[in-house]
Length: 264
Ligand SMILES: C[S@@+](CC[C@H](N)C(=O)[O-])C[C@H]1O[C@@H](n2cnc3c(N)ncnc32)[C@H](O)[C@@H]1O
Image 1 (tube, helix red, strand yellow):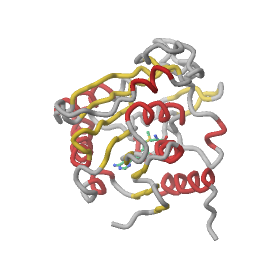
Image 2 (image 1 turned 180 degrees about the horizontal axis):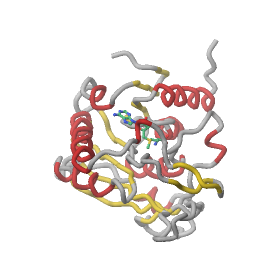
Image 3 (image 1 turned 90 degrees about the horizontal axis):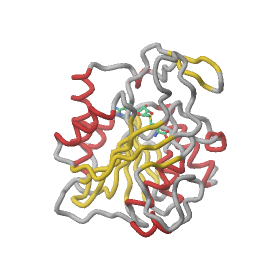
Image 4 (image 1 turned 135 degrees about the horizontal axis):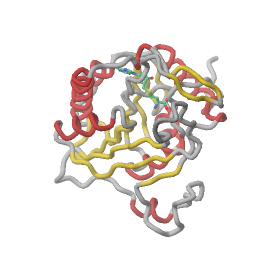
């Protein structure tokens, strides 16, 4: 299977993740981070930069029925389980629209939940309907494949490293399950932006917590490859998959811009 782009420890595939995952070697991946479609693009509105905007992100984010979404989620989680090493872990992000189905699908596929992280975004946009609370966090579920295996958790790095950017992390105290991290900065979008781009800081914490140098990290819905950029910055290996040509192109550009490997 030919990658769309490959350089050293960074590999991108264009296509449907369930199909691509079925061709990757069994039990070869140390950690998976997945930020699947939220199926929210149904013509609603949101607030961006103080202006009213459509929530629609693209064809890849079109709404599914509960049953369709559960079927899809179980299928890609099963495909991820096949490539994950027995001591590997998976992180999956989502909002209240999707995260309960995700949790159900993970448990159905025999994963064991380790934590659910509440990622609080202090700069979340206001709620325009004024009929409910302003959604200002995402949930990130962290789960292990096999209850009997020792998975990587870098406890000391979480407790003692410098996490000064997070106002609620106290120096020298255990890392808690609520993380305060703003949305992706403008400076992270210099190569172009993805409508659901994750901040590098979220991936930094996830990679620091659950992997070692040289580990292979996979993102089956990689978008702009935030996971991949942070993985390479931290000397890990990366495989990213996305179904949209424009996003694998953006990932390639972002990688080249950051690591200065210009085409000749
Ligand atoms: C929420 S976005 C991920 C954003 C990413 N975390 C980032 O920081 O840029 C989800 C991505 O999944 C991709 N996608 C949707 N369905 C897919 C499928 N069946 N296989 C592979 N990618 C898919 C979309 O094109 C989109 O880029």
